Length: 84
Image (cartoon, rainbow, N blue to C red; front, side, top):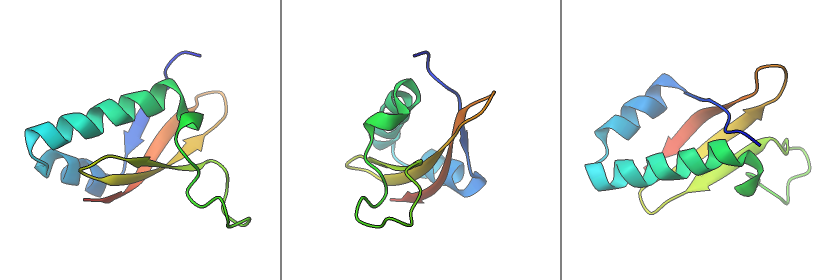
């Protein structure tokens, strides 16, 4: 499966830019892995049946990011939350 593009909520992009370089690179590498295989990261809450399986969580030592897999003719990831 080819990598799919990613879009960031503006506040997420800003927060990532504010991270120190090593942490920013760790987040960048994790996001690239998510683009290559969006289903590889765990679902946001496996125990909550009401949450959509398309919502996933990236975890690094620097941050936790939530993204949703937007399917369709132009699939992409949308990263909408960052906790750093």
